[in-house]
Length: 259
Image (cartoon, rainbow, N blue to C red; front, side, top):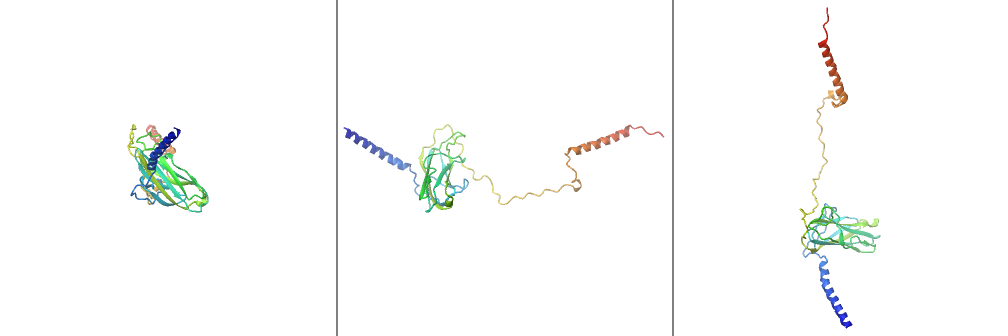
C-alpha cells in the first residue's frame, strides 16, 4: 500500500515537472527569427540606440562606458532584459555592474527579478545581468511610477571597479525579450499619448550669436546731463519755474515810478 502511494506521488511529480518545463522554456527570452543584430549603442538618453523585443545586440565597448538602448512597450506587455559582459584576461580586481531601465519621463523602473547589480571577482571571464520589468499598465496616477505605454531606455554601466581596469575592452551581448502580453487591462482610464522623450527640444546654434551694435543717437552736448528721472533735476526745474513766476508776478503788480 505504501509503495503504491509512493509510486503515485512520483508519477504526479514527474507529470508536474513535464508540465512546468515547457512553461519555463517559453518564458526565457530568445532572439526573434530573422531579426537584424544591432552592433552599436548610444552614450546618453538622447542618443539611445532604438531596438525592438527579440532583436539581439552585440557591441564592443570599454569598461567605464555608459551604454544606452531604447525600446517601445504597450499596455499588457512584460519584458525581460538580459545582458552578458565578457571581460579580457588579466583584470586587477572585482567590479560591480548594473542595468537600469527608465521610462519616457526618465523615471527609474523597478525590477521584479534578475541580477540587476552583480559583482564579479577578478578571475571571472564574464558577468550576466538581468531585469524583469513589471507589466505595462494602460493608465496610472501621475504621482506613481507604474510602467506606462511608451519608450523605455536601458542603461548598462559599471559602478565600482579598480582604476587600472578602466578603459579595458569588453564585449556586450544584450537582448530584450517579451515574455508576456496580456493586452489592455480594464483600468478606469487610458493614457492620452505614449510617454516618449522629446529628443528634438530645440535647434543647435553652430556659431556664437553676435550682438547688434546699439544706435548712437545721443547728442554729445547733452551727454554730461543726468537722466531726467533724477529727483534733483526736477527740483531745479521747479525752482527755476518758481523764480520766473515770481519775477513775472512782481512785474505785473509793481507801481510805476513817479518823476
